[in-house]
Length: 275
Ligand code: AMP
Image 1 (cartoon, protein in one colour):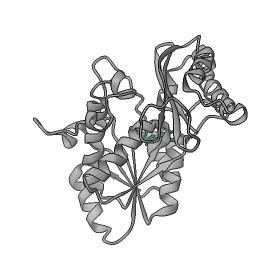
Image 2 (cartoon, protein in one colour; image 1 turned 90 degrees about the horizontal axis):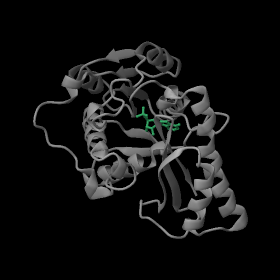
Image 3 (cartoon, protein in one colour; image 1 turned 90 degrees about the vertical axis):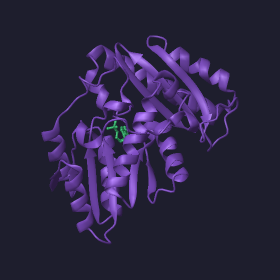
Image 4 (cartoon, rainbow, N blue to C red; image 1 turned 30 degrees about the vertical axis):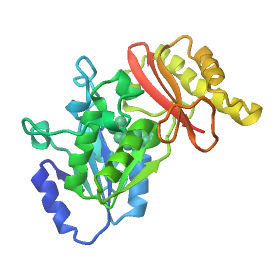
């Protein structure tokens, strides 16, 4: 497996691939089986697989966890070797960013609600780095998790709006056996936090059960039921939208998402369930 640390190394590698199909999985590292599922799918569907590991500073807000975000390059590299990755791209910040650069403004494509409302500027940084990465890796297909549902939908919109020549592949959200959505930030949870964090999936799952078995479609009722589960946690938002991120009052099966963000202790977690 190749380790590429500069944009020019990446471009040279990319140019050597000629007509081969390239699957790309952008990550911030501290890889877990959620990332692994994206990588496995990319491995199955392409000649070559490239994974990037880059903790992108522009998507962190002042006071967020940029400095303490888990970094474990050695074990990430080993994991990538095991999954048959061809090249890992690990650039440094100065290589990805210059001074006084333009950026993508996510507010114009529903980046101002949900995560965008709670983390203003987060999606500008995210979309800008994803655009830079897509333009350097030039993948045939790029893989993103439904775990970050709003991120996925914004990326799909950016790709469509800028006529980017890549297929975005949405991948299922992967959970621990007990239901907790896998996340690099789970490493921050104390034992007690970890136990409390299980309420998130229990609440989402209960809402799904009410929809499927009791035909409960009223969003305000569903939100109240989820809130009851999340009582010991600090709720940032619980929202229900259609698959284009429009808020809805009634569930439409096969076209709805319940999304939430909570703080468990000091750790901010997001989760969602597609209905
Ligand atoms: P991150 O390293 O957190 O920026 O995530 C990199 C990619 O992995 C994104 O497309 C995420 O949506 C995806 N991802 C993270 N956690 C999961 C998960 N539990 N299940 C599926 N995909 C995930």
